[in-house]
Amino acid sequence: MKKIAIIGAPCIDEVISPSGELTSTQLGGILYSYAAMQRMASTATLEVEIIPLTFISIQDAEYLEPFVLKLTNFNLSHSPRTYDARSNRVKLVYKNETERLEFCANILPELTPEHFPIELLASLDGIFINMISGFDISLDTLKHIRKNTKAYIHLDVHAMILGELSDTPEKPRLVRGVKQWREWLSNVDSVQMNEMEADWLAVPELASEIDLVREARTIYKETGSPKNIIITRAERGATCFDFTSDKIWNKVPVKREILNTTGSGDVFGAVYTLSKTFGTSEEQSLYQAEEIAGWNAGLEKLEDILV
Image 1 (tube, rainbow, N blue to C red):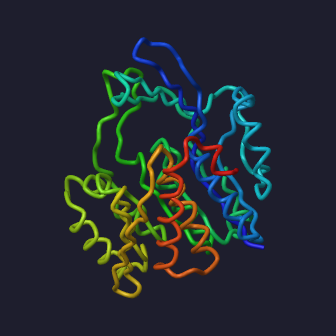
Image 2 (tube, rainbow, N blue to C red):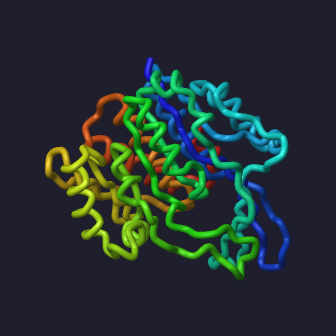
């Protein structure tokens, strides 16, 4: 039985019409990763226990409970409960049918080393860290995790490159580099980011994907981590720069009807982590992750992943 932990915050997306009306409330954030791992575990009949490590808001039980009850491979006993904080609220404010503004005023509390008991870390085979808010864990907490586990650690940069939270669509979170980006990379086995995140992660030191990849390869040769950098490229697929074999793997996507790209990166990271935890090669893990992330873009909502 493999044990995989997922770090990252649940989100509840509030869709607001051009007239200012709240039209729907949808699940999002790390819950896409949960759904993807559950589907893979079920369809492939994998012997795996999946352990969410995030605060669970009791106030949001009406939204979360129907979804969580479908996660039969999950063990939520290690997830701290909070009666005070709400799940991350992402407001999607539509200007018209196609254009929208996105902002988030509040997030769940940051997880600290006390939320990661040494006994639990030692028992894990894989860890997926998905920086949904950008403040899910600190670098010091990551170092605590790395020091106390032999698990394969996959990091999705996600919102790490975004600054302060926003309480209004007129004041969006600003993009900026991560000051200690070298230490983040050297404490995980693989790192996932999209093309925009790759350009911004190491600013102002570096300001392009290729410069970041070259420097990450140097860090790998010095420290043994990260073993690879993965760049997701939306409709153009994904690339894995594999430093262990000095090879570059590319996955060109199958053409599909795109209905909703929300959560595709979260699905990608979940599938990649699960594949690597079960010993799949970098090339095949990339192919599986891109394939299922592309399939997710053809679904209308998160819950369809579990159908």
